[in-house]
Every structure is written in structure tokens, then in C-alpha cells.
Image (cartoon, rainbow, N blue to C red; front, side, top):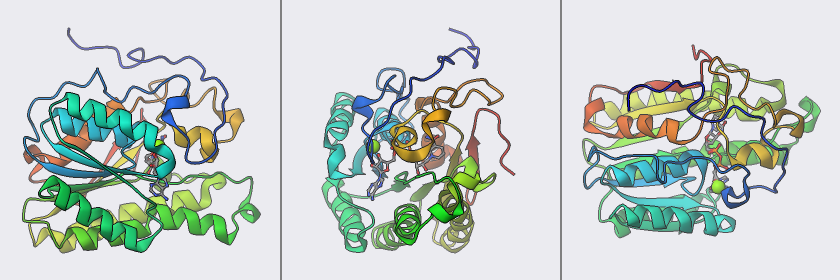
Length: 293
Ligand code: NAD
Ligand code: MG
């Protein structure tokens, strides 16, 4: 098959309104996102790599985890205990690809858990070549008064603090050649007022990509970041967006539709693989057209 029209590669129809409590389950999502379970084809680009993916149970993190496995990597995934069913599905796909899957549930807001997570991933995988941080919390508020302390603490505590803890611990195990892949957002460049705290965390992640890459480059460790536009995921329908915005989610993009997680998978693979050996400190936009600059 030759080149495909990106506008109709996936549906651009309205999404049905739907709501779930945080963290939201992919199992209950309608329609199901395409995370590459059958659509992603590997080409041995990460043969025998050992990777840890947070948020690896669903949507963007699931797509990265599945692609890593199909490219030949063994993969540990982290998620919240409430997401066990989603994680089991990912484990099955990784094992069907002939690779090892390690499930490590736990809450990244807990500092000690971050250290245990990285230690367990290293131990159970028998090494560690990449940490891919995808977990995130997004809760919209109507106006600035809605952003109370508990709420913005949860957002920063999920999206920013674990980067420090997991990276610090990973450095105990990393050898030259290892990589760190962070996950920002178009919100890090074009913040929405209903997402003041979330957008600020995503800007912080861009900053950390640059500063960490400067420090760690001297050790042969590369740090890069993916900035997604609108991707269909449990995050959006568990408080990430007002219900009124769900049906037309993504339709205003240049390509006229929301992204499907598998459309990000190749970028995560690229940033961890040898082929990107001269790339560090960069943010890759996968946005459906919105500029990130
Ligand atoms: P998602 O709901 O599938 O993923 C978020 C994951 O974060 C959850 O699966 C959960 O496992 C994890 N998580 C949340 N709180 C946690 C905690 N306290 N401890 C451990 N894990 C926790 O939704 P997604 O859209 O795939 O989001 C993945 C990442 O992509 C997030 O960082 C999000 O900010 C980013 N992102 C998403 C979009 C989008 O449109 N979907 C756009 C830009 C950026
Ligand atoms: Mg999830």
C-alpha cells in the first residue's frame, strides 16, 4: 500500500459524550483508541532494549509500550492500581510480540514509589536503557478560582515531581547510550485558561528536557520530549475537557480530526533508538498541525 491520506486514515466523526472518574479506563472508552495492537509493525529497531513506560496501560503510553515491544524491547509499565485491567491487555500484546512484560502498579505522587519503580524495572528486566514518562493528570477548571491547592498540587505532583525522582534513580543504572523520553503537550506552548496548572506543568517539562539534556549529554545520555496535540484517550473524558468539547475534539486541527495513539508510536521509538543518536534536548510535535514554537 502506498501513501495514505492523513485526513481520513482515522475517523473524523464526532465522539460520543461520555464521562468516567479519574483515572479513566481505556476498556470503557467509546470508540477504542488505536494503540497499535494490530496496526503497528515492528522492524527490530529496539532489539533487546529494556524500557520503562509510565502511563503504559492506556492511550499514548500504551502505544509507546506496544511499539517498543514490537521493535524487540522488553517493557515494564507503570499505571495506577485501578487500571489493572487495561495493563493486563498491554501485557498480553507485549507477550504476543515475543517480549517480556513487567507490570508495576503504583502511585507516582508517592516519592518512595518512584525509586522502587525504577529499581524493580531494572531488576525484573535485567537492565534499563530507557525511561519513557507518559503518566499525567489533567483536570479542567472554569476559572482561576477553581484551581485550589489540592488540585494544582495533584497536577504538579503527577506531571513534574516524578521526573526528578525517576531520573535520579535511573542514573544509578543507566550506561552511556541510555535515553529519557518525556511527554509535554501543545499546552506547553499554547496554554488554555481552563488548564492553567496542567499547561504550566507541560511548559516545565519542555524546560526540563533542555536542562536535563545539557547535564546528561556529558554522560552519553540523551533526553528528548514528545509534544502531542489532541489524542483520543481516557484522560480527556475523565475531567481533561468539559463534556461540551468532547464531540468535536480534534476537529479544528489542520488535519481535521483527533490523533490516534499509534500515530505517536513511531516518534517514541525513534527517540529511543540508535537512529536518533545525534538528537538530544529536542521536543517533537505530533499535533495534527498546531505549531509548537
Ligand atoms: P491516559 O489517561 O491514557 O494516560 C494518563 C496515564 O497517567 C494513566 O493511564 C495513568 O496510568 C497515569 N497516571 C495518572 N496519574 C497517575 C499517578 N498518580 N501515578 C501513576 N500513574 C498515573 O491519557 P493520555 O492522553 O494517553 O495521556 C498520556 C500523556 O499524554 C499525559 O502526560 C498527557 O498529559 C499527555 N498528552 C495527552 C494529550 C491528549 O490529547 N490525549 C495531549 C497532549 C499531551
Ligand atoms: Mg490509563
